[in-house]
Length: 334
Image (cartoon, rainbow, N blue to C red; front, side, top):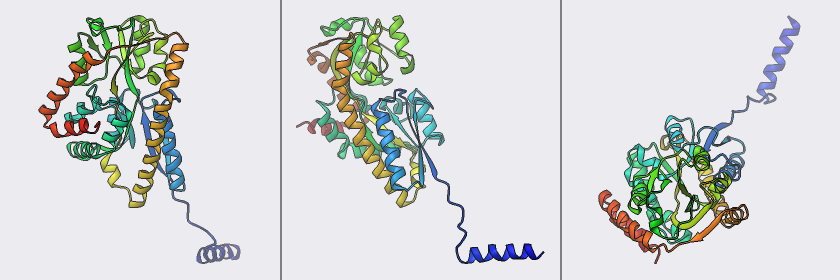
């Protein structure tokens, strides 16, 4: 009994003088995800920068898990996980967002909307980008909150033959983004838009399931699409300076403290700068690799493509009541 009493006195004294500390609070897990499986993809560089910055700023209060295609290689899977709370932040293309009842986001899918990356940055980082973020948040009842706009390069045609003129696409199947305005564009050209999951596209090109596809040099070269039988001819149509949405769940965001929000905001800022830097840097290197590995590249007069794209832009903006925003996008190039 004396021994037990001595132990109790020791513990009580230690607590009173602060000699024993309370158990450390467990780090909050923050799950970020994208659908690309390559570790060299710009998304991965951006997500790793987010992890580095958030964990450093929070002194370990946040622990970030980065998933590169490991919880979904289709973006609709990632959007669903964000909605359900199984992911805290994802990268998604505008086309997948239209399927959850936000047609306005299809504006970001319009082709030949930007003259180059400087024009694109002025739009998404300015008042137009802020307005679309507000629309998406309101239309989704705070389910989706745009944290930032990322890029996936500039998209080109690649397929079983080079395109010398617009008529060469007539009757060809082409794997495209899942967006109404994108499919409309290729249909008006005379091609046949086809849906193939990104993770299955290599095999589809290898076996001739589709005649062609379209993407940027970095994304299709990282998965060796240019080495397939139906992917080695690249025509630089440059039809889409792409927008990707870095999305959070708005309700989850609202649950964070002001300090946590400040940490996340700074981490997103640095991650966005890194993702864009790697995207731009990799474009020329990826093109060089494609050519060195047997890809055949040619250019084309883009004026006939633009002539088809502009009326599609006008029609969508009118239908959605976004004529002012379309004009603001165009004015940002002046």
